[in-house]
Length: 211
Image (cartoon, rainbow, N blue to C red):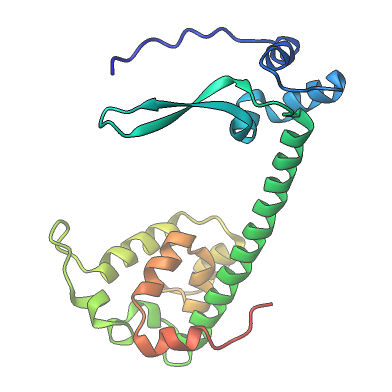
């Protein structure tokens, strides 16, 4: 399919409301609609009213039917319902984000407690981690997963401007102990390290409660 230049003109919010009404979306309060479009934006809201658009069936390239959404809305489609879907999705995202944060914090604490009793720098010692993580070479970099992970960790620690890092560096020699270093790990760093734990240590991570 040949691509074409994007040539749709920008519409002011009042024009957006007129367009939506012309396409069959029921708007009973123009002021509330204007506030919603001004606060959230037409493009973001379009994802929530997409299921309300009329659909036609057409034949695809392989002969199988495809369904195409049209501009007009299905009967009895209300902007108020679009707003309710948006609010519901926003609340759900916040709940999920909170749950993920609780799990992430719990994993950090469990890793620190599990490994630090054996060594304050267990995260840097290959003997404390799985052989797959510490011995298998990446054919592209010729380094192990652990070596690549340590390179990323050293970079994060070096560029950190956290006060506890500044305090540590002003008084002590590297490397930083695990229970401090782990607070600098982003989610990707944490996940990669989690995959490199020994099986027994992974099993211990699921044994504690998550508040």
